[in-house]
Image (cartoon, rainbow, N blue to C red):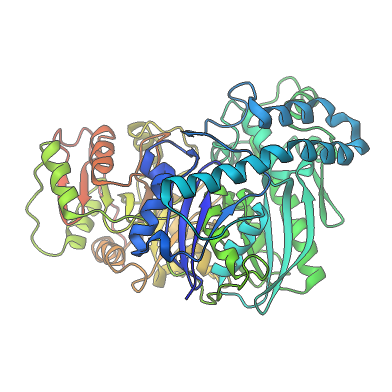
Length: 592
């Protein structure tokens, strides 16, 4: 038996415990420290995954840390996004120099080599500091290895896909000097076919546009995706001048990065450019470039199953475009596709020959669920209710029936029960639920939660009823279990479940199976019996700019602040002490 701990120490870092290729526990530090996308050494999540797995540090065979060319981050802090402050430290020097000299074109590779050579002492210091912290604060004596950023993404995607042979793609803003890696996986062996340097980053251009639109780069890209449906892609020809796919690689044709890229792009756009049209343009171009990039390598390798990870694949519309390629048969998107998944990827990379002295046995089964974090205990629930003077209602009959009854009558029900989800999506255990026929829900519920989202809420749908909602999903049912892809909705879904349908006629579903989540499946089944509708709205249980709730106290606080109608906390159902402050909109009942 091989027991490996994986760590991520950059933006949205965390820890993961993997035993013989099976993910036992995975937690991101933000959920425990309550700082959004926390950066720094993940002390709390390290302890949490060991406790969840019932493992001591003495039993670990190795610790694998994501990232080899990173700079040590002392302490713990929230990640505010790029360009919010003047760049500081060695990393800030990189951004300033890269922006200043990015117009030198062919000199960039030489400058990159000089830069990375100059920063090698900083990279070595990070390795020393992390090893020192592990020894001093956690009593670690096992080997500590550092794993390439993109290999972490590739391992996370491949070893959770269930594919034997696959094209594995990692595309993001950048990590360890690269912004993309393409691998061919055949019978468990990984071969690197192509790498794209960080200078030619597709993901960074989406971040530049995010900043130009007044949002926080590397944090609010989802807002751009949502806003894109409100505009016209008028500026695509301009964006093609800056970043594109050329003969199977990504090329920074604009020759600029960071602030210089933003300045040049701003000058190139018309003076009266609109946020909506710029969002539509970067989204259309993003889809087109990624589609051509993946298509090139799928044709070249003949591999028809595709596994994806990296921040670019947090874009759910891009993922649908890849699934729609004639070259692809099946697509899987790792649920923790961003750098939040580096800990899991680092641990799973123990199965890659050369990472450890003896590779860990690989798990060949597809990922079943992501309920990998801490559960909420009864004692914790009792303490939270007493602290806030909350008294639960008397529930007669099964709890799923009670929740479904209130949803059908138009109440909002927040649910915090079972183990916390890994990844950016709440999938029933830390979710806010509501009936899906209310077209106005995006406005009033986001207002309650102090959110500024443009994209409609997502649905949780019974797996057996997927064709009622989306038609043929062959080849993409697995990623649809984790809300990582959009699908075009059927006419009856667009009519009956308007609260979850985007302006372009798509939705981002979670398909719920009884063998994966029996209680959540029971809620949806009971709701279907009452309304004829096969799904409900499922949005993450958190206030704006806060992490998804983890503990009972987190859940109660967000429930009270968000003016939500009911809280299903473990086995208790609690009505908001101030009651409902709006007119109820019951679900529009449809024939079953």
